[in-house]
Image (cartoon, rainbow, N blue to C red; front, side, top):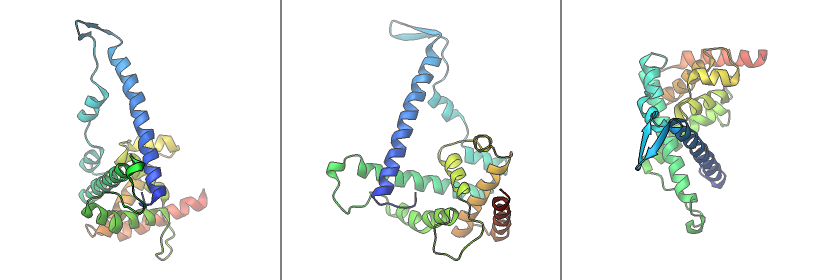
Length: 214
């Protein structure tokens, strides 16, 4: 999410609609699986019932907490992940609120986003995302890694596991973890929470060599 113009608003709205349809289809499948061995009697569902998908999701630990707990991420990298997720969700909610009723939207108006979130989005999130994606006016860096931004979105926003990310991209086990740590290290470094310049430089050299070899 690197902009707040009409194109970004449409993209956020399309993404939210796809997610809504996916969740609805998943809920329907989940209800069938939970209730296929049960019956309804006098308004009550009897028989074998599994927990709802929502209940199971609530019982699962937050992936960021788990990754900090097993020391895949440092505490400051975990803090970066939490802030990224907060910014993404608040900005997306603001965009959707403004685009859900086009008739009420006046030209030139901006999404209704809290001032603090808007500042974090402009001063931290956007420069970080552009750095990883390679869209920036800063001096050229050889190792920018758009794939790292994709992994952050998959793990931090969508809740995918690192193993799922590796399998989906046919990567060697552990590659997604390297990209996630790198992306969050860049964010934490830019926020001034921890210094990761040597690690960042080492990763970028490795990624540059990997791209040339591939």
